Structure formats: C-alpha cells, structure tokens
Amino acid sequence: MYRLYDYPPSGNGYKVRLLLSQLAIPFDYVAIDILKGETRTPEFLAKNPNGRIPLLEREPGHYLAESNAILFYLAQGTPFWPADPLAQTQVLSWMFFEQYSHEPNIATPRFWLCHVPKLNAYQDMALPYKQEQGYQALAVMDQHLAHHQYFGAGQYTIADIALYAYTHVAPEGGFDLSRFPHVGRWLQDVTAQPNHVPITQTRF
Amino acid sequence: MYRLYDYPPSGNGYKVRLLLSQLAIPFDYVAIDILKGETRTPEFLAKNPNGRIPLLEREPGHYLAESNAILFYLAQGTPFWPADPLAQTQVLSWMFFEQYSHEPNIATPRFWLCHVPKLNAYQDMALPYKQEQGYQALAVMDQHLAHHQYFGAGQYTIADIALYAYTHVAPEGGFDLSRFPHVGRWLQDVTAQPNHVPITQTRF
Image 1 (cartoon, rainbow over the protein chains, first blue to last red):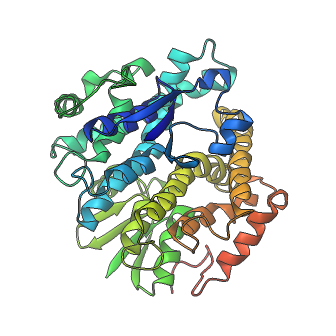
Image 2: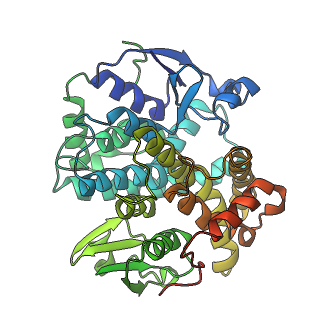
C-alpha cells in the first residue's frame, strides 16, 4: 500500500490526497510537522534529500518526490491524464505554471500569515511583492477560465487538481478571490467532482 | 516550421534551443527583450497571457508556454524522454525540482547581478536568501550525481537539459561550483553530448 508523508495543512500534499481519493486508492498517512523540522532530520533526508513533503513511498524504501510528479505517476492510464501528447503538454504547462508563478506567490503568503508566528524582515518585505505576483497568476487563470471549463484538454485533469490546491485557500494568504469570477465558477466545478475531499481531510 | 520567442540570455529559452539542436529540428528565432518590456505588450500577451518567454509557436497562431512543458512536447518519441512511466516520473520530478527549488534561487541571482543595472531594496535583501537556497539545491544535485551519471532513467534526458541550463552559468549568480565535484563531472558529460550548443548560440 502507498504511504504518503505529508504536512496536513499543505496544499501540495492535498493534491496527492485528493487524487488518491478520486482514484479510490487507499494509503497510509504519515503526518510530518515541518514547523518542528521533521523534514530536515537525517531519517527524512535519507528518504528525500530535498527535505520536502509530500513524499510518496510507492513501495517499501522507494520514494517519489514533487507533488506534481506524483500526480503524473498516479494519473497514468486514468481520465485525469489525457491520452493525446499535445493535451498532455497543456496539462504539464499549467502544472509548471503552478509551481513557478502560482505556488511561491499564493501558498507562501498563506504559510507565512497562517503558520509562521512572526515574520522576519525578509518575509515582511517579500510579502507584498509575492501578493502582487500572486494576483497576476490569478488573473492569468481567470482569463483562461473565461473561455474554458478546465485547465487542460477540455476535461478535469491533474492540472485542475494542482491549481485548485492553493487557489481555493488563497484568501488565507490575503487574496480577494471575488475579483476573479471565472476562478470562482471553476472552484465550484472542481468541488463538484466525484469523490472530492476537503483539504482538511487527511484520511478516508 | 517552429518559431521560438526567446530572450537570448535566458536559460529557460536555452533549454528549448539545446533540445531542438540535439533533435536537429530547424526553427525560426524571434529575440524578445524582456528588459524593454517586450513580453508585456498587448501583442505578446495575446500569445502568452503569462507574459513569459520561451514561447514555442508550434503552428501559426498556436503556442506552447513553460520551458519544461515545451521540452516534454518536443521529446515525445525520442530517447530524451524514457518510455517507462516510473522513469518518466523521475524525469518530471527533477524538472519540477528545477522550476521550484533551483531556477528561482540560481537563475534569479544571475539575472539580478548580470542584467539588472541596480538592485532595488527587495532584491538587495532577497539575494543572500536566494543564494543560500540555491546552494541547497546544488547540494541536492551533487548528492544525486555522486551515485548516478544523469538525473533520470540512467540516460541523458530532458531532466538533464532542464537542470544544465542554469547550473552551468550559476557562477554568474555568485555561486562557487567547485564545491560540487559531481556536478562538475556531470556538466562535462552534458557538454559532451552530440549536437551540444552553448547558451550564447541562438541560431544554427
């Protein structure tokens, strides 16, 4: 059985939990407290030298890192990953957008504002810059969603899962989602998918 | 014929140029000056709403964004993309590592130090933080390369192209690569691949 190492509030971990739920794949769950440095212990670094969750133990002693790569792995042969290479490319394009333009600017403010007791000087200075970049990413999403129901391939895919994870909790990072009506419509469509689970649910 | 919109010093653009060279695929090259705001014009934003290069026009009026997604597209059916789904996942895992843990911390200091005339207060404060994170990414790479010739699948793949692009010019961002002997060995192995071209070469 798969074993997922995860920090329960993590949107990156939630991506994997959500897809596992929607594929009806059971898994063991190991909660890791990143605030206590539990991803930086020698024991965890032996599992993932990059010291990050989520980490999927696909077989005992064999691990997969990077949330979006884990989604790719789990989605093979399912409707969450389209069959056409061009459609696959569009899905991956949005998933790289998510990790480069979206997550560092939307997830990081949420983490700083909700999980870090007191911001250091760098965080204080970086926060408005990240929020400005985050709003740009949300605007790019809204523009796409004005003309498309989902992000890739005309169907609900792992691109939607990747982008949903931190978008739907963006208000926790100080973002006003009411500015983006198409994003709001899409969030509802994602939530209505079969076997959707909330970010707060770590076991099912 | 493909048309590549690119900023010539860009490592992200270089990834695409390098793979096109190694696949012997001809292409038109359109140089875009990001310092002059040429990715933020209405004309360019109509091509890529995220306002970034590289952008591949695969057919007139049809565009692919995100360097690593473009690599995935071009590599289909070639030895640069392995056939096994688990090996594919490892390749993508390193490519997401590149966009999340590596590029923002290694490429951005290079851009700031080599291309921005004067750093603003945010950049001044962020630079040492990014360099520290960049060194951590290089250490993760070095640890992997101590036991593997390449990043994915036991062969040279688009994961190596993605990571090579900004690693080999990391000294321009203030990084001392002599601390990472396995990275140094790997850089030589990548350079020795057939049809390798340098980052300064935009047409061939």
